[in-house]
Length: 250
Ligand code: PEP
Image (tube, helix red, strand yellow):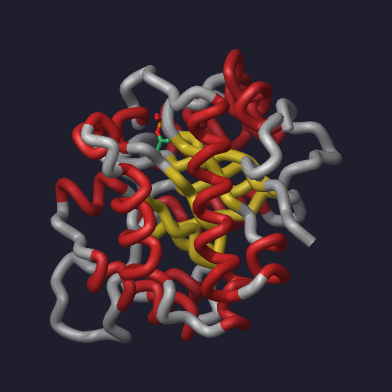
């Protein structure tokens, strides 16, 4: 069964006290029953405290990245085992900021995907075209290549642990959102691409999130599209009222 998911990517925001404050606010405002599964991704140093705080709630915690190696001389990096050891079972990989600012290639992201899956983590796999790609009409090619090069080496059973997040780079943090029709068109294309390679059952069960300036006032329309199964939310996830409004727009 295809799941609806709303995930909040907190990026490099919120120190320890602010993390507690936002989670307290979120727990106070979130309805006890939600249609969507809810995930929040605080910074590494606040993951353990977030897990403790959210114990007994329906809100899951994700890391924003991991290193592909098991352990070793990689100063400043965090392994899958370390993340799992504090009770976190989800990880965001391939975010456009990791691709652009930290030069993460499709090959590197593919190896991070492997590590996450070996550790039985759920991967939220992000991908999406830049403005120049859309302007030149190359957006379907770019998206297809990112998907195939970063993810299509996985096995059929691995797909149970994968959530896709289509995030057009030109819509992230810009206030510019893809129209619901543009989101639907690309999500349908993504699902068809998965269907061709892995079959209908996997494609139909696959959750495909949209990310890029989703706000309380545009969430409902975007989520109403048949191939949009929820959202990956940046800015609006930093405010509990806005995030809950987006969660309940599903
Ligand atoms: C993101 O960073 O994944 C994102 C979608 O950000 P925003 O909602 O702020 O555009």
